Length: 507
Ligand SMILES: Nc1ncnc2c1ncn2[C@@H]1O[C@H](COP(=O)(O)OP(=O)(O)OP(=O)(O)O)[C@@H](O)[C@H]1O
Ligand SMILES: [Mg+2]
Image (tube, rainbow, N blue to C red; front, side, top):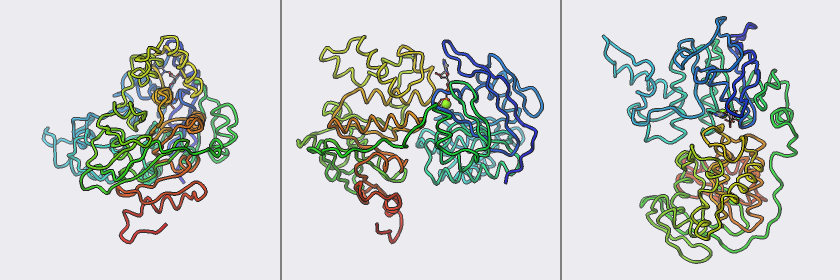
Protein backbone atom coordinates (compact mmCIF):
# COMPACT_ATOMS: atom_id res chain seq x y z
CA UNK A 1 0.00 0.00 0.00
CA UNK A 2 1.24 3.48 -0.74
CA UNK A 3 2.12 5.61 2.24
CA UNK A 4 -0.54 8.28 2.16
CA UNK A 5 -0.77 11.01 4.73
CA UNK A 6 -3.89 12.91 5.57
CA UNK A 7 -2.56 16.34 4.83
CA UNK A 8 -2.84 17.22 1.18
CA UNK A 9 0.28 17.84 -0.85
CA UNK A 10 -1.76 19.73 -3.42
CA UNK A 11 -4.86 21.67 -2.60
CA UNK A 12 -6.86 23.34 -5.34
CA UNK A 13 -9.90 25.40 -4.37
CA UNK A 14 -12.42 27.14 -6.61
CA UNK A 15 -10.21 26.94 -9.69
CA UNK A 16 -11.84 28.75 -12.60
CA UNK A 17 -10.67 29.20 -16.20
CA UNK A 18 -12.66 30.86 -18.95
CA UNK A 19 -11.93 30.96 -22.66
CA UNK A 20 -13.96 33.06 -25.07
CA UNK A 21 -17.40 31.51 -24.94
CA UNK A 22 -16.42 28.54 -22.74
CA UNK A 23 -15.96 28.07 -19.03
CA UNK A 24 -13.41 25.27 -19.10
CA UNK A 25 -13.11 25.09 -15.30
CA UNK A 26 -15.86 26.26 -13.01
CA UNK A 27 -14.80 26.47 -9.34
CA UNK A 28 -13.09 23.10 -9.27
CA UNK A 29 -11.71 21.70 -5.99
CA UNK A 30 -9.05 19.02 -5.97
CA UNK A 31 -6.91 17.72 -3.17
CA UNK A 32 -4.09 15.24 -3.74
CA UNK A 33 -2.14 13.50 -0.97
CA UNK A 34 1.49 12.45 -1.03
CA UNK A 35 1.79 8.80 -2.05
CA UNK A 36 -1.57 8.49 -3.76
CA UNK A 37 -2.57 8.01 -7.37
CA UNK A 38 -5.40 10.40 -7.96
CA UNK A 39 -7.43 9.81 -11.11
CA UNK A 40 -8.88 12.75 -12.99
CA UNK A 41 -11.64 11.61 -15.27
CA UNK A 42 -14.34 13.14 -17.45
CA UNK A 43 -15.67 13.34 -20.99
CA UNK A 44 -13.73 14.90 -23.84
CA UNK A 45 -13.75 18.63 -23.15
CA UNK A 46 -14.61 18.29 -19.45
CA UNK A 47 -11.61 20.40 -18.47
CA UNK A 48 -8.96 17.84 -17.45
CA UNK A 49 -6.11 19.19 -19.56
CA UNK A 50 -7.02 22.75 -18.68
CA UNK A 51 -6.62 21.93 -15.00
CA UNK A 52 -3.25 20.35 -15.74
CA UNK A 53 -2.15 23.42 -17.71
CA UNK A 54 -3.07 25.74 -14.82
CA UNK A 55 -1.14 23.55 -12.41
CA UNK A 56 1.87 23.44 -14.75
CA UNK A 57 2.04 27.21 -15.28
CA UNK A 58 0.98 27.04 -18.93
CA UNK A 59 -2.40 28.70 -18.47
CA UNK A 60 -3.30 31.38 -15.92
CA UNK A 61 -6.50 30.65 -14.00
CA UNK A 62 -9.17 33.35 -13.76
CA UNK A 63 -10.00 32.48 -10.19
CA UNK A 64 -9.34 30.16 -7.27
CA UNK A 65 -6.25 29.20 -5.31
CA UNK A 66 -3.65 26.46 -5.46
CA UNK A 67 -1.48 25.37 -2.53
CA UNK A 68 1.43 23.00 -3.04
CA UNK A 69 3.47 21.61 -0.16
CA UNK A 70 1.87 24.17 2.14
CA UNK A 71 2.98 27.09 -0.03
CA UNK A 72 0.80 29.18 -2.35
CA UNK A 73 1.28 27.86 -5.90
CA UNK A 74 0.99 30.59 -8.51
CA UNK A 75 3.23 29.51 -11.40
CA UNK A 76 3.77 32.24 -13.98
CA UNK A 77 5.57 29.86 -16.33
CA UNK A 78 6.26 26.15 -16.77
CA UNK A 79 9.67 26.58 -15.12
CA UNK A 80 8.02 27.70 -11.87
CA UNK A 81 5.99 24.51 -11.61
CA UNK A 82 9.05 22.40 -12.39
CA UNK A 83 11.05 24.17 -9.71
CA UNK A 84 8.32 23.45 -7.19
CA UNK A 85 8.62 19.74 -8.00
CA UNK A 86 5.76 19.20 -10.43
CA UNK A 87 6.53 17.06 -13.49
CA UNK A 88 3.97 16.86 -16.26
CA UNK A 89 3.50 14.53 -19.22
CA UNK A 90 1.15 16.56 -21.39
CA UNK A 91 -1.47 15.11 -23.70
CA UNK A 92 0.28 16.70 -26.67
CA UNK A 93 3.81 15.40 -27.09
CA UNK A 94 6.40 18.12 -26.57
CA UNK A 95 9.65 16.58 -27.81
CA UNK A 96 12.16 18.23 -30.12
CA UNK A 97 12.21 15.90 -33.15
CA UNK A 98 15.67 16.76 -34.48
CA UNK A 99 17.38 16.11 -31.14
CA UNK A 100 18.38 12.70 -29.84
CA UNK A 101 16.45 10.73 -27.26
CA UNK A 102 19.10 11.49 -24.61
CA UNK A 103 19.12 15.21 -25.42
CA UNK A 104 15.35 15.33 -25.10
CA UNK A 105 15.51 13.53 -21.77
CA UNK A 106 17.89 16.05 -20.26
CA UNK A 107 16.80 19.22 -22.00
CA UNK A 108 15.92 20.78 -18.68
CA UNK A 109 19.20 19.94 -16.98
CA UNK A 110 22.12 18.50 -18.89
CA UNK A 111 24.61 16.61 -16.71
CA UNK A 112 27.74 18.74 -16.56
CA UNK A 113 31.31 18.18 -15.57
CA UNK A 114 33.58 21.21 -15.19
CA UNK A 115 30.89 23.26 -16.86
CA UNK A 116 30.78 21.06 -19.96
CA UNK A 117 28.01 18.68 -20.91
CA UNK A 118 29.13 15.23 -19.80
CA UNK A 119 28.00 13.13 -22.77
CA UNK A 120 29.08 9.81 -21.24
CA UNK A 121 27.09 10.43 -18.07
CA UNK A 122 24.15 11.57 -20.14
CA UNK A 123 24.14 8.40 -22.20
CA UNK A 124 24.45 6.14 -19.12
CA UNK A 125 21.64 7.85 -17.29
CA UNK A 126 19.51 7.83 -20.46
CA UNK A 127 19.97 4.05 -20.77
CA UNK A 128 18.75 3.57 -17.19
CA UNK A 129 15.68 5.71 -17.79
CA UNK A 130 14.81 3.99 -21.05
CA UNK A 131 15.13 0.65 -19.32
CA UNK A 132 12.72 1.79 -16.61
CA UNK A 133 10.03 2.46 -19.17
CA UNK A 134 10.90 -0.59 -21.26
CA UNK A 135 11.95 1.30 -24.38
CA UNK A 136 14.60 -0.49 -26.41
CA UNK A 137 16.20 2.22 -28.52
CA UNK A 138 19.66 3.78 -28.45
CA UNK A 139 19.85 7.09 -26.56
CA UNK A 140 21.47 8.54 -29.70
CA UNK A 141 18.43 7.94 -31.92
CA UNK A 142 16.89 11.17 -33.22
CA UNK A 143 13.37 11.42 -31.84
CA UNK A 144 11.90 12.01 -35.30
CA UNK A 145 12.74 8.39 -36.20
CA UNK A 146 10.57 6.98 -33.40
CA UNK A 147 6.97 5.82 -33.63
CA UNK A 148 4.24 7.55 -31.66
CA UNK A 149 4.21 5.01 -28.82
CA UNK A 150 8.00 5.23 -28.50
CA UNK A 151 7.83 9.03 -28.33
CA UNK A 152 5.26 8.70 -25.58
CA UNK A 153 7.67 6.47 -23.64
CA UNK A 154 10.42 9.06 -24.02
CA UNK A 155 8.06 11.69 -22.57
CA UNK A 156 7.36 9.40 -19.64
CA UNK A 157 11.06 8.65 -19.11
CA UNK A 158 11.70 12.41 -19.16
CA UNK A 159 9.13 12.97 -16.43
CA UNK A 160 10.66 10.18 -14.34
CA UNK A 161 14.16 11.64 -14.77
CA UNK A 162 13.80 14.57 -12.43
CA UNK A 163 13.19 14.78 -8.73
CA UNK A 164 9.54 15.40 -8.32
CA UNK A 165 6.89 15.44 -5.62
CA UNK A 166 3.94 15.43 -7.96
CA UNK A 167 3.82 13.65 -11.29
CA UNK A 168 0.96 14.52 -13.64
CA UNK A 169 0.15 12.27 -16.59
CA UNK A 170 -2.43 13.40 -19.13
CA UNK A 171 -3.47 10.26 -21.07
CA UNK A 172 -0.02 8.66 -21.07
CA UNK A 173 -1.23 5.25 -22.24
CA UNK A 174 -3.33 6.34 -25.22
CA UNK A 175 -0.73 4.91 -27.60
CA UNK A 176 0.78 2.20 -25.41
CA UNK A 177 0.41 -1.57 -25.54
CA UNK A 178 -0.76 -3.49 -22.45
CA UNK A 179 2.82 -4.55 -21.76
CA UNK A 180 4.15 -1.00 -21.88
CA UNK A 181 1.27 0.13 -19.70
CA UNK A 182 2.10 -2.55 -17.14
CA UNK A 183 5.73 -1.35 -17.06
CA UNK A 184 4.52 2.21 -16.54
CA UNK A 185 2.30 1.11 -13.65
CA UNK A 186 5.24 -0.60 -11.96
CA UNK A 187 7.13 2.68 -12.13
CA UNK A 188 4.17 4.63 -10.78
CA UNK A 189 3.89 2.26 -7.82
CA UNK A 190 7.60 2.61 -7.13
CA UNK A 191 7.20 6.40 -7.06
CA UNK A 192 4.14 6.43 -4.82
CA UNK A 193 5.90 4.08 -2.41
CA UNK A 194 8.54 6.82 -2.12
CA UNK A 195 5.82 9.33 -1.30
CA UNK A 196 5.42 10.93 -4.73
CA UNK A 197 1.85 11.94 -5.59
CA UNK A 198 0.44 11.16 -9.03
CA UNK A 199 -2.43 12.74 -10.95
CA UNK A 200 -3.44 10.31 -13.66
CA UNK A 201 -5.79 11.02 -16.57
CA UNK A 202 -7.18 8.25 -18.75
CA UNK A 203 -10.31 7.21 -20.60
CA UNK A 204 -9.60 3.52 -19.98
CA UNK A 205 -11.81 2.39 -17.13
CA UNK A 206 -9.88 -0.86 -16.50
CA UNK A 207 -6.72 1.17 -15.93
CA UNK A 208 -8.44 3.46 -13.50
CA UNK A 209 -9.72 0.62 -11.39
CA UNK A 210 -6.34 -1.07 -11.50
CA UNK A 211 -4.09 1.83 -10.56
CA UNK A 212 -6.21 4.52 -8.90
CA UNK A 213 -6.51 5.20 -5.17
CA UNK A 214 -9.00 8.08 -5.34
CA UNK A 215 -10.66 9.85 -8.21
CA UNK A 216 -12.21 13.16 -9.11
CA UNK A 217 -14.83 13.31 -11.84
CA UNK A 218 -15.16 16.46 -13.94
CA UNK A 219 -18.24 17.21 -15.94
CA UNK A 220 -18.62 20.34 -18.07
CA UNK A 221 -15.84 22.01 -16.12
CA UNK A 222 -17.26 21.20 -12.70
CA UNK A 223 -16.06 18.71 -10.12
CA UNK A 224 -18.99 16.36 -9.57
CA UNK A 225 -17.44 13.70 -7.34
CA UNK A 226 -14.34 12.88 -5.32
CA UNK A 227 -13.78 9.63 -3.46
CA UNK A 228 -11.98 6.30 -3.28
CA UNK A 229 -11.97 4.38 -6.57
CA UNK A 230 -12.87 1.15 -4.81
CA UNK A 231 -16.22 2.53 -3.71
CA UNK A 232 -17.52 2.83 -7.28
CA UNK A 233 -18.59 0.37 -9.95
CA UNK A 234 -17.66 1.10 -13.57
CA UNK A 235 -21.34 1.72 -14.38
CA UNK A 236 -21.65 4.29 -11.59
CA UNK A 237 -18.51 6.00 -12.80
CA UNK A 238 -19.80 6.18 -16.39
CA UNK A 239 -23.08 7.64 -15.20
CA UNK A 240 -21.27 10.36 -13.28
CA UNK A 241 -19.08 11.25 -16.26
CA UNK A 242 -21.64 11.13 -19.01
CA UNK A 243 -24.71 12.08 -17.00
CA UNK A 244 -26.73 9.14 -18.33
CA UNK A 245 -26.63 5.36 -18.32
CA UNK A 246 -24.92 3.51 -21.11
CA UNK A 247 -26.96 0.33 -21.39
CA UNK A 248 -24.12 -1.61 -22.90
CA UNK A 249 -20.48 -1.14 -23.63
CA UNK A 250 -20.95 -1.96 -27.32
CA UNK A 251 -23.88 -1.44 -29.65
CA UNK A 252 -25.70 -4.61 -30.72
CA UNK A 253 -24.19 -6.19 -33.83
CA UNK A 254 -27.00 -7.10 -36.20
CA UNK A 255 -26.89 -9.96 -38.68
CA UNK A 256 -26.07 -8.18 -41.87
CA UNK A 257 -26.31 -9.49 -45.40
CA UNK A 258 -22.80 -9.76 -46.80
CA UNK A 259 -22.39 -8.75 -50.44
CA UNK A 260 -19.68 -8.73 -53.09
CA UNK A 261 -15.99 -8.20 -52.51
CA UNK A 262 -15.23 -4.51 -52.14
CA UNK A 263 -11.53 -5.07 -51.68
CA UNK A 264 -9.36 -8.04 -52.39
CA UNK A 265 -5.63 -7.92 -51.70
CA UNK A 266 -3.48 -10.82 -52.89
CA UNK A 267 0.13 -11.54 -51.90
CA UNK A 268 0.89 -7.96 -50.94
CA UNK A 269 4.44 -7.44 -49.70
CA UNK A 270 5.27 -4.21 -47.92
CA UNK A 271 8.99 -4.77 -48.59
CA UNK A 272 10.71 -7.28 -50.91
CA UNK A 273 11.56 -9.55 -47.95
CA UNK A 274 8.22 -9.24 -46.16
CA UNK A 275 5.84 -12.18 -46.05
CA UNK A 276 2.93 -11.97 -48.52
CA UNK A 277 -0.40 -10.81 -47.10
CA UNK A 278 -3.81 -11.59 -48.58
CA UNK A 279 -7.10 -10.26 -47.28
CA UNK A 280 -10.53 -9.23 -48.44
CA UNK A 281 -13.46 -7.14 -47.31
CA UNK A 282 -17.01 -7.60 -48.56
CA UNK A 283 -19.83 -5.14 -48.68
CA UNK A 284 -21.58 -5.10 -45.29
CA UNK A 285 -18.58 -6.37 -43.34
CA UNK A 286 -16.69 -4.94 -40.39
CA UNK A 287 -13.31 -6.66 -40.42
CA UNK A 288 -10.96 -6.25 -37.47
CA UNK A 289 -7.19 -6.20 -37.68
CA UNK A 290 -5.49 -7.27 -34.46
CA UNK A 291 -1.83 -7.74 -33.61
CA UNK A 292 0.95 -6.29 -31.54
CA UNK A 293 2.42 -2.88 -32.31
CA UNK A 294 4.93 -3.45 -35.11
CA UNK A 295 3.24 -6.62 -36.38
CA UNK A 296 2.66 -5.09 -39.80
CA UNK A 297 -0.94 -3.95 -39.45
CA UNK A 298 -0.41 -0.25 -40.11
CA UNK A 299 2.22 -0.90 -42.82
CA UNK A 300 -0.20 -3.14 -44.69
CA UNK A 301 -3.00 -0.58 -44.50
CA UNK A 302 -0.68 2.18 -45.70
CA UNK A 303 0.38 0.05 -48.66
CA UNK A 304 -3.23 -0.71 -49.58
CA UNK A 305 -4.05 2.99 -49.41
CA UNK A 306 -1.06 4.00 -51.53
CA UNK A 307 0.64 5.94 -48.75
CA UNK A 308 3.65 3.63 -49.20
CA UNK A 309 4.63 1.74 -52.34
CA UNK A 310 4.28 -2.04 -51.82
CA UNK A 311 7.01 -4.31 -53.26
CA UNK A 312 4.58 -6.84 -54.69
CA UNK A 313 0.96 -7.90 -54.82
CA UNK A 314 -2.32 -7.16 -56.49
CA UNK A 315 -5.32 -5.17 -55.34
CA UNK A 316 -8.84 -5.55 -56.70
CA UNK A 317 -11.64 -3.12 -55.98
CA UNK A 318 -15.15 -4.40 -56.69
CA UNK A 319 -13.64 -7.29 -58.63
CA UNK A 320 -11.49 -5.16 -60.92
CA UNK A 321 -7.68 -5.00 -60.67
CA UNK A 322 -6.51 -1.47 -59.78
CA UNK A 323 -3.16 0.24 -59.41
CA UNK A 324 -2.96 2.39 -56.31
CA UNK A 325 0.30 4.32 -56.13
CA UNK A 326 -0.94 7.39 -54.27
CA UNK A 327 -3.67 8.03 -51.68
CA UNK A 328 -5.44 10.03 -54.39
CA UNK A 329 -5.89 6.79 -56.39
CA UNK A 330 -7.32 5.06 -53.33
CA UNK A 331 -9.82 7.84 -52.69
CA UNK A 332 -10.80 7.75 -56.38
CA UNK A 333 -11.51 4.03 -56.00
CA UNK A 334 -13.68 4.69 -52.98
CA UNK A 335 -11.22 3.86 -50.19
CA UNK A 336 -10.54 6.17 -47.27
CA UNK A 337 -8.10 5.81 -44.42
CA UNK A 338 -8.10 7.32 -40.94
CA UNK A 339 -4.45 7.00 -39.93
CA UNK A 340 -3.26 6.50 -36.38
CA UNK A 341 -1.21 9.67 -36.57
CA UNK A 342 -3.91 12.29 -36.38
CA UNK A 343 -1.50 15.18 -36.61
CA UNK A 344 -0.03 13.97 -39.88
CA UNK A 345 -3.58 13.54 -41.11
CA UNK A 346 -3.51 17.32 -41.34
CA UNK A 347 -6.06 18.82 -39.07
CA UNK A 348 -5.89 22.47 -40.01
CA UNK A 349 -5.88 23.95 -36.53
CA UNK A 350 -6.78 27.47 -37.57
CA UNK A 351 -9.73 26.46 -39.74
CA UNK A 352 -13.17 25.99 -38.22
CA UNK A 353 -14.62 22.60 -37.38
CA UNK A 354 -16.94 22.59 -40.39
CA UNK A 355 -14.14 23.12 -42.91
CA UNK A 356 -11.98 20.48 -41.24
CA UNK A 357 -14.78 17.96 -41.32
CA UNK A 358 -15.30 18.39 -45.05
CA UNK A 359 -11.71 18.40 -46.33
CA UNK A 360 -11.74 14.81 -47.55
CA UNK A 361 -15.04 15.25 -49.26
CA UNK A 362 -14.04 18.45 -51.04
CA UNK A 363 -12.26 16.76 -53.92
CA UNK A 364 -15.19 14.60 -54.91
CA UNK A 365 -18.01 16.80 -53.84
CA UNK A 366 -16.87 20.16 -55.20
CA UNK A 367 -16.21 18.66 -58.63
CA UNK A 368 -19.85 17.71 -58.76
CA UNK A 369 -20.66 21.23 -57.68
CA UNK A 370 -22.39 20.08 -54.54
CA UNK A 371 -20.27 21.74 -51.92
CA UNK A 372 -22.19 24.65 -50.56
CA UNK A 373 -21.27 26.49 -47.42
CA UNK A 374 -24.71 25.79 -45.98
CA UNK A 375 -24.46 22.06 -46.63
CA UNK A 376 -21.00 21.96 -45.09
CA UNK A 377 -22.23 23.64 -41.93
CA UNK A 378 -25.30 21.43 -41.70
CA UNK A 379 -23.26 18.25 -42.13
CA UNK A 380 -20.79 19.45 -39.51
CA UNK A 381 -23.59 20.27 -37.10
CA UNK A 382 -25.10 16.82 -37.57
CA UNK A 383 -21.82 14.94 -37.09
CA UNK A 384 -20.80 17.13 -34.15
CA UNK A 385 -24.04 16.27 -32.45
CA UNK A 386 -23.73 12.55 -33.07
CA UNK A 387 -20.15 12.42 -31.80
CA UNK A 388 -20.83 14.86 -28.95
CA UNK A 389 -18.13 17.27 -30.11
CA UNK A 390 -17.85 19.78 -27.32
CA UNK A 391 -17.50 23.16 -29.03
CA UNK A 392 -19.26 26.49 -29.25
CA UNK A 393 -20.41 25.60 -32.80
CA UNK A 394 -19.29 24.44 -36.25
CA UNK A 395 -17.43 27.71 -36.78
CA UNK A 396 -15.13 27.31 -33.81
CA UNK A 397 -11.47 26.81 -34.70
CA UNK A 398 -10.12 23.31 -34.13
CA UNK A 399 -7.18 24.70 -32.14
CA UNK A 400 -9.53 25.60 -29.29
CA UNK A 401 -10.87 22.04 -28.94
CA UNK A 402 -9.77 19.49 -26.36
CA UNK A 403 -7.59 16.61 -27.57
CA UNK A 404 -10.43 14.10 -27.80
CA UNK A 405 -12.68 16.53 -29.60
CA UNK A 406 -9.98 17.16 -32.22
CA UNK A 407 -9.90 13.41 -32.80
CA UNK A 408 -13.63 13.35 -33.33
CA UNK A 409 -13.30 16.04 -36.01
CA UNK A 410 -10.80 13.94 -38.01
CA UNK A 411 -13.00 10.90 -37.72
CA UNK A 412 -16.07 12.87 -38.74
CA UNK A 413 -14.23 14.01 -41.84
CA UNK A 414 -13.85 10.44 -43.07
CA UNK A 415 -17.34 9.46 -42.02
CA UNK A 416 -18.58 12.41 -44.09
CA UNK A 417 -16.52 11.34 -47.08
CA UNK A 418 -19.04 8.67 -48.03
CA UNK A 419 -16.65 6.09 -49.49
CA UNK A 420 -17.20 2.38 -50.13
CA UNK A 421 -14.45 1.14 -47.87
CA UNK A 422 -13.30 2.88 -44.74
CA UNK A 423 -10.02 1.87 -43.11
CA UNK A 424 -9.65 3.19 -39.56
CA UNK A 425 -6.51 2.84 -37.47
CA UNK A 426 -7.14 3.13 -33.71
CA UNK A 427 -10.48 4.94 -34.20
CA UNK A 428 -11.29 5.53 -30.53
CA UNK A 429 -7.89 6.37 -29.10
CA UNK A 430 -8.30 9.28 -26.66
CA UNK A 431 -12.09 9.22 -26.99
CA UNK A 432 -14.35 9.13 -23.92
CA UNK A 433 -16.68 6.20 -23.24
CA UNK A 434 -19.84 7.94 -24.41
CA UNK A 435 -18.45 9.11 -27.74
CA UNK A 436 -16.75 5.74 -28.19
CA UNK A 437 -20.14 4.10 -28.28
CA UNK A 438 -21.34 6.59 -30.90
CA UNK A 439 -18.28 5.96 -33.06
CA UNK A 440 -18.85 2.21 -32.89
CA UNK A 441 -22.46 2.76 -33.82
CA UNK A 442 -21.45 4.89 -36.81
CA UNK A 443 -19.01 2.24 -38.04
CA UNK A 444 -21.70 -0.42 -37.74
CA UNK A 445 -24.22 1.75 -39.55
CA UNK A 446 -21.78 2.14 -42.44
CA UNK A 447 -21.71 -1.65 -42.74
CA UNK A 448 -25.51 -1.76 -42.46
CA UNK A 449 -25.69 0.50 -45.50
CA UNK A 450 -23.52 -1.88 -47.51
CA UNK A 451 -20.11 -0.33 -47.03
CA UNK A 452 -17.04 -2.18 -45.82
CA UNK A 453 -15.00 -1.26 -42.76
CA UNK A 454 -11.48 -2.35 -41.80
CA UNK A 455 -10.68 -1.56 -38.17
CA UNK A 456 -7.09 -1.69 -36.94
CA UNK A 457 -7.09 -1.56 -33.17
CA UNK A 458 -4.92 -2.45 -30.19
CA UNK A 459 -8.05 -2.40 -28.10
CA UNK A 460 -9.05 -6.05 -28.28
CA UNK A 461 -12.44 -5.68 -26.53
CA UNK A 462 -13.27 -3.09 -29.18
CA UNK A 463 -12.57 -5.54 -32.01
CA UNK A 464 -14.48 -8.32 -30.26
CA UNK A 465 -17.31 -5.87 -29.64
CA UNK A 466 -17.98 -4.63 -33.18
CA UNK A 467 -16.33 -6.85 -35.82
CA UNK A 468 -17.73 -9.68 -37.92
CA UNK A 469 -14.33 -11.30 -38.17
CA UNK A 470 -10.83 -10.54 -36.99
CA UNK A 471 -7.54 -10.95 -38.87
CA UNK A 472 -4.61 -11.40 -36.53
CA UNK A 473 -1.23 -10.12 -37.65
CA UNK A 474 1.95 -11.53 -36.21
CA UNK A 475 5.44 -10.60 -37.37
CA UNK A 476 4.29 -9.25 -40.71
CA UNK A 477 1.94 -12.07 -41.72
CA UNK A 478 -1.66 -12.91 -41.04
CA UNK A 479 -1.35 -15.65 -38.45
CA UNK A 480 -5.02 -16.46 -38.44
CA UNK A 481 -8.59 -15.34 -38.86
CA UNK A 482 -11.47 -15.75 -36.43
CA UNK A 483 -15.17 -15.27 -37.20
CA UNK A 484 -17.64 -13.76 -34.72
CA UNK A 485 -19.17 -17.04 -33.54
CA UNK A 486 -15.69 -18.24 -32.51
CA UNK A 487 -14.51 -14.97 -30.93
CA UNK A 488 -12.24 -15.53 -27.98
CA UNK A 489 -9.75 -13.02 -26.61
CA UNK A 490 -7.21 -15.64 -25.67
CA UNK A 491 -7.22 -17.13 -29.14
CA UNK A 492 -6.55 -13.72 -30.67
CA UNK A 493 -3.67 -13.11 -28.27
CA UNK A 494 -2.14 -16.53 -28.91
CA UNK A 495 -2.21 -15.85 -32.63
CA UNK A 496 -0.78 -12.35 -32.14
CA UNK A 497 2.21 -13.76 -30.24
CA UNK A 498 2.61 -16.88 -32.38
CA UNK A 499 5.06 -15.37 -34.87
CA UNK A 500 7.38 -14.27 -32.09
CA UNK A 501 7.64 -17.63 -30.29
CA UNK A 502 10.09 -20.26 -31.43
CA UNK A 503 7.73 -23.20 -31.33
CA UNK A 504 4.59 -21.17 -31.91
CA UNK A 505 1.36 -21.67 -30.05
CA UNK A 506 -1.33 -23.31 -32.08
CA UNK A 507 -4.71 -21.66 -31.90
N1 LIG B 1 -7.21 27.70 -26.14
C1 LIG B 1 -8.54 27.49 -25.99
N2 LIG B 1 -9.43 28.38 -26.46
C2 LIG B 1 -10.76 28.19 -26.30
N3 LIG B 1 -11.30 27.13 -25.69
C3 LIG B 1 -10.46 26.20 -25.21
C4 LIG B 1 -9.04 26.31 -25.32
N4 LIG B 1 -8.47 25.25 -24.74
C5 LIG B 1 -9.48 24.48 -24.28
N5 LIG B 1 -10.68 25.05 -24.55
C6 LIG B 1 -11.99 24.51 -24.20
O1 LIG B 1 -12.00 24.18 -22.84
C7 LIG B 1 -12.77 23.01 -22.61
C8 LIG B 1 -11.96 22.00 -21.82
O2 LIG B 1 -10.91 21.49 -22.63
P1 LIG B 1 -9.83 20.45 -22.08
O3 LIG B 1 -8.76 20.36 -23.10
O4 LIG B 1 -9.43 20.85 -20.71
O5 LIG B 1 -10.68 19.10 -22.03
P2 LIG B 1 -10.22 17.62 -21.60
O6 LIG B 1 -11.06 17.24 -20.43
O7 LIG B 1 -8.77 17.56 -21.45
O8 LIG B 1 -10.72 16.73 -22.84
P3 LIG B 1 -10.04 15.47 -23.63
O9 LIG B 1 -10.49 14.24 -22.93
O10 LIG B 1 -10.65 15.56 -24.99
O11 LIG B 1 -8.57 15.66 -23.66
C9 LIG B 1 -13.20 22.52 -23.98
O12 LIG B 1 -14.52 22.93 -24.22
C10 LIG B 1 -12.27 23.22 -24.93
O13 LIG B 1 -12.87 23.43 -26.18
MG1 LIG C 1 -7.28 16.59 -22.50
